[in-house]
Image (cartoon, rainbow, N blue to C red; front, side):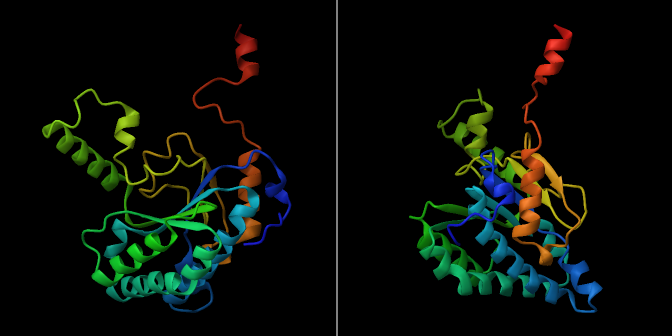
Length: 252
């Protein structure tokens, strides 16, 4: 990560603090080139490296990426195995750099049914970067928004049954039981490849996020497409359910 800004969205003061990305299009990228889907996933890892490097230059402090969903287990075993190998390869190749450059790694999602070698990789990445605070990289791995909300409800019910909480629950208290509780809600959620849906990603946290859908396939992603998404975000007015000032004045 360099300290220089690349211009474009990075030059504006209103950069989103937290950007989340649904990294979509690996398979289509590979198919268009007559390659197996696994080649698309490998190219997607390089796109992630480029994006993690570029994001802090634009003033982004948190980046959350959808690495592997709870529904992805339905894919062919060979593809799932390749995705697991890529997870380990990414950490093996980039952990030292992330640690050195002040990136703190968080992994959100269910861990109870992950293989021991994957758990070791996750715990090692979090342990070695836990004192970093320049930039936060949050990876949703074996994650589903509905599952996370259900798990938070289960934790809350357990706390009530054991006298650690009351039935008078508020939103803030519920949020503290989500796996994303350590960080701020996303300001901007990007989905690549032209699809226009959240696909069970950060369902609670997305309540007031701006959504940007881009036609670029994930393996082609990097500083340029990220800058374009940030520029679109910065052109919008975030009202959190309030009215535009012109509407208020017009209606008295």
